[in-house]
Image 1 (cartoon, rainbow, N blue to C red):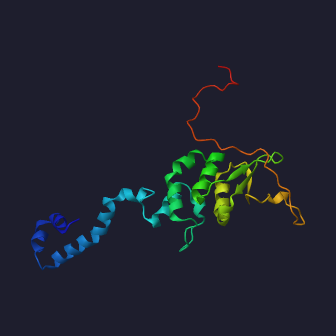
Image 2: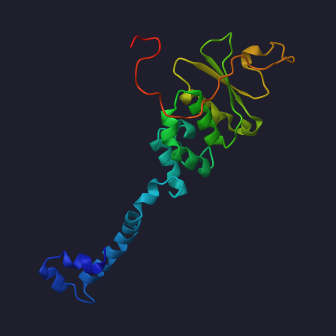
Image 3: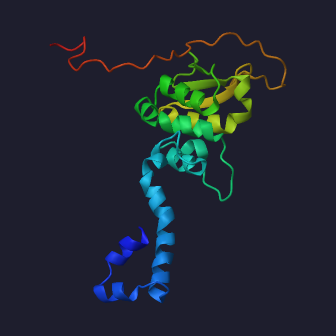
Length: 210
């Protein structure tokens, strides 16, 4: 708020006392200076909530705002973010999509690709281990296994167990006790990731009588 605008809000006696060189005039100048940063922020407040325009330091807050806390991990003072700020911006921008598809193969794979910037994640459902998911991580994302593990734990269905392995490594249960080599063929029952689309129209299922 400008000095003149503040002065107009004062009682008439104070306005008369706010002449040049007076103590009140100096106080009004200070008030204008103190208001300036807040007014500049409010003038462009929409920038704060735009994932690609918000300041880098605010991107982490927005990531938690769209329920992607697990990507950042437990908050620690002065700890650097686990991902580049560009990845956090992508996650925020797709927050609604990820919430819609949470608990599905498509949702998990999309979250992993957005967080790491790497494609090629494979979700396997071994035929001999029902309700178990093996997430194979491409070599390019090997340095982000901690983040990947947190995303898998949050995005998987609650009733499903999961493990994270590198793409060319066998799951822990399939490794020999003596540490020798393992012949590891193609996964059985590989989960497919559907493209997002509109939900089916409401109505009885084919098994139900109309």
